[in-house]
Length: 250
Ligand code: NAP
Image (cartoon, rainbow, N blue to C red):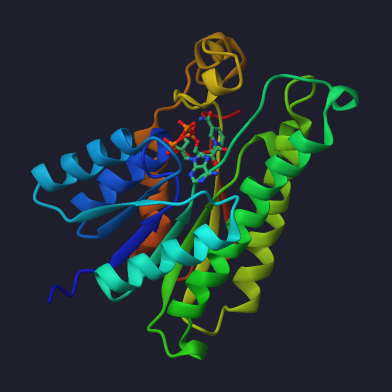
């Protein structure tokens, strides 16, 4: 049986998660590629990894659903038999609205997917990786956002608040399990050129925002993936509870 380490990437089928999955496979990880509904996109990532000589598995689960999360980790257990890393990447925005226009349903969905989903996935990973639970250690990388600093007024303040929760969760969990062989860090991407902007009704947002970015361009999913893989790697062995901006200076 292969001894290569195993990484679960939530939302690994598109955008930043797909870039993380592919780079991780090239760096020797076996990868569980989670997706919510777009099976074809997940299969394409798995096929690309296989064509490159790597090993990957597509796993459907809505991280906004606690039962789905448990099943996803059980599938990873059955298929790979170990877990060494988690990238809490799955996340959503919504259409641009003022806070005084937002519905309860919108806010609850945002928090359920972006916050509760990430915390529940981290808990499942800790149960498998922490030395306290008989695991052999590992690393968690949470995908936050520069929206934490900017607040995203008149677009999605609820999203920004959900990512602020991710930052604080990262610091707290990192300190809680610092002696258990599991490091926990976060990345704050800036404006990255992915489908997420279209899902919020602003398909050209990445290009339109370029003049507001010190580097005058959006970032690529691959540039975020490089930072994620650093935090997962032994090169970051003394890095925990850190939040790294990958934002072109924004
Ligand atoms: P994206 O292109 O919209 O891709 C989202 C991915 O997450 C897809 O694989 C999607 O799966 C999956 N997903 C969505 N909801 C899910 C759910 N409930 N359960 C499981 N998977 C789900 O997004 P992205 O731009 O790569 O963003 C990835 C992360 O980076 C998010 O946390 C986002 O907040 C953060 N971020 C992005 C930017 C940016 O500018 N792009 C900036 C800062 C932070 P399906 O294909 O099945 O839908």
